Image 1 (tube, protein in one colour):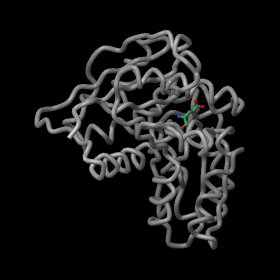
Image 2 (cartoon, protein in one colour):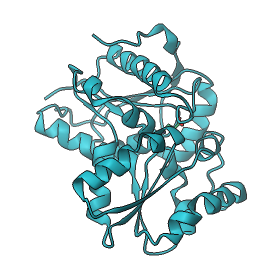
Image 3 (cartoon, protein in one colour):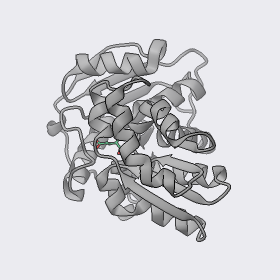
Image 4 (spheres, helix red, strand yellow):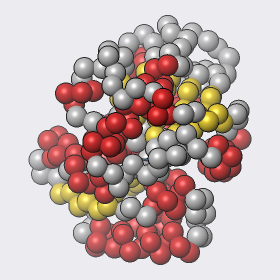
Amino acid sequence: MDNRPIGVLDSGMGGLTAVRELLKILPEEDIVYFGDTGRVPYGTRSAEIVTQYAMQDISFLLSKDVKLVIAACGTVTTTLPEELTGRFRFPYTGVLKPTVRTALAATRNRKIGVIATATTIRTGAYERELKRLCPEAEVISGACPLFVPLVENGYVDRQNPVTRMVAEEYLAPIRAAGVDTLILGCTHYPVIAPILADVMGEGVTLVDSGKAAADYARSMLAEAGLLTGRKSRGSCSYYVSDAPDDFARNASIFLGERFGGEVGRIEITNYPDTIV
Ligand code: DGL
C-alpha cells in the first residue's frame, strides 16, 4: 500500500488522455501532472533535445515524491533508450508496449495503422514492437505533425473543418491500405478521436495510447502492492511550464467535470536533466 501520488508527464495536454482513464479506474489515487507547455511540441525535435526535456520533466515529478512515473507521451516513450529507462530506480512506464498489446488484441486482419509525431515515426519503435510480437503484421505508419498544434489550440470540436481537412489528408493512405486497427501513437490524438473515427469509417478500432498506458499502470501498481489504501477520492495537481490559463481552459473542455484544481506554473529548466 502506498499513498504517494502517480506522476504523469507530457509535452502539453496529450497526457490528459491517460489522466482521464486514471480518474476512471483509480479514483482514489492522487495524481501529479506535468505538461511542458512552454516547450511543446516535442515531436518535431531531435532525440537529444527530447531526452533532455524528458529527464527534466521526470526530475520535477520525482521532486513531488511520486510512486510511479508515466511518460504519457509517445515521443518521450519512443525516444528514451531502454538502456536509460531500464536503469531508473523508480517504477516507470511509457505508452509503447501497452498500446501495441492492445492493438494486437484488437486486430482481426493484422493490418495496423500507426499515426504519431514525426520524431516517433522516425524511431520506427511502434513498427518494431508490433513485428516483434506479431511477425506477420502489416504496419502502415504516418506522421501527423499538425495534430498537436491543433489540439493545443483547442481545434478539437468534432465538426471543426480545419482539423477534419487535415485528418482527411493524413489518413487517406492508411485508410486505403485497409487497416482494421489504428494506433493513436501520440497521446494528443485521442482528444480528436471522434474526427479520426469519422474519417477512418466504420469497422476500424482506434487504440488510445494514453488509455492503454493508464490501464497498464494500474496493473503495475497492483502487482507491486503500490495502490493507495485510501477509500476517498484522490486529488489531482496540474503543473505547466507556460500559460496555465490556456491549459486550464482546454483541460476543462477535455476532462469535463473531472477537471478540478489549480494549474501551477513552474520553471522546468531549474530541474536536472540527469537522474542519479
Ligand atoms: N503527446 C506527445 C506524444 O505522445 C507529444 C506531442 C508533441 O509534443 O509533439 O507524442
